[in-house]
Image 1 (tube, rainbow, N blue to C red):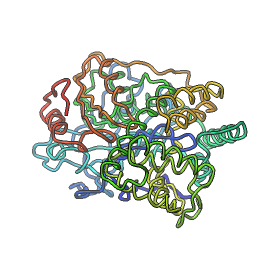
Image 2: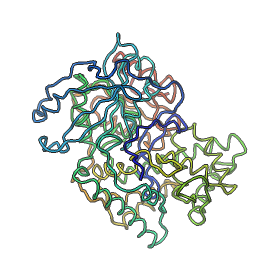
Image 3: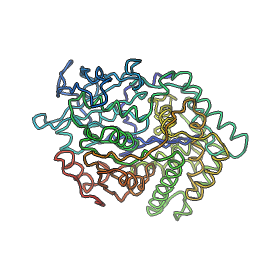
Image 4: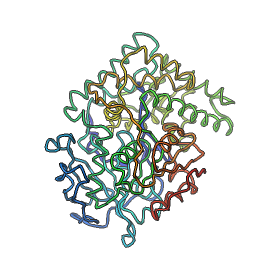
Length: 533
């Protein structure tokens, strides 16, 4: 098995300005809530300070009111060392916040220092989503994930949340087993296929139970949010300045509700409201990916010579028929060390990948043209990018495991296949291409070995500073109405709307969105509520 969780990897192979990896892919079609920048533009340079550099700000060693038992964690001193992409450090957090004197976890940090230190404002903590996306890798792209003036005046700080990447990573099953899991039939047609699907979810659950140990019960979003407050203090910030994208909005909203008086300049882009149930997530993503796929087909048709049809309805039907054909007769692929055929599962993953950014649409058209000619390799290449997988079969991150570990704690689900089948039929009515597979994606959480006892809940963050919420009208993974939903729940928030395609908006869309967010970070100027671009 590849030591995938110890590799710090720049995702230079990714096509497009934004890609997400999040809630249900392949056999449990996880359409993760992750946001990865494109490799365009200059790469981030190392920090200016050498090994053993002192912190830029004096740590705030006193814990917040009510957190006195955590005093030793808030009193840590970060030791920053030069590393690839900037400066790295590690902080300790309690495995179980109810037992702060017990076992600890290590959280990996990366800081890219402000380009104009003389006018430095502070630290901006960033999270790309997931659950399972690496904030350390995301911060390496500091030049691209924030506006120029924000980059000049803030240290950009990323962290791998507990269980992710280099932060005591969760490792449940082998790469070979993960291939099998992701390659399962995502839309079971009969009792035998349903049984096989449940067995695949059980394999993942059993592997996480065997290898995750005590840690498996402590990978929730709430615990990661508590880790962020320790990070805030160690960075010397009285308030947390934060950019969260995709699932990072769930993490940020949870933090704001727990620590409202510590909320600084907060931007939540591509929203996952914390009160969504598992069924609501699947149904919403089904509609989101359906809308995004229609937008892709419309673009393909308007360009002319679209290989899948001459109208949107014709093209959408072609895609549905194509996936059914893959279920019955997979296409051969070449150059992969283990996966030799493109089946419905891998084909669905490749299609999903391309929905996250318009810049991937041309690649998808070429892949579908190749598939028509009998070659599944280009579409498998897109699927590999989605799953953080190389053609040699190595997974370079652990998102496809930790995503379930976090989601299943945050949103308990059912193992009742009658309910799953009913959801599949219902979701298919509004999302005929994506609804059924997303409904079946709930199965692993239905058999998960740890039940948190918690349920999704609304957040208000009463007493916080103003929070900027951003939504994209044709976002596939985090539908626009979720941004509206969270904005209405928060006691002090404004909503910016980008009328466009792709996942998330800031630094991907246009200056109409970017300028007010930059001004908010740099000057504290709250954007106009209801701004539409």
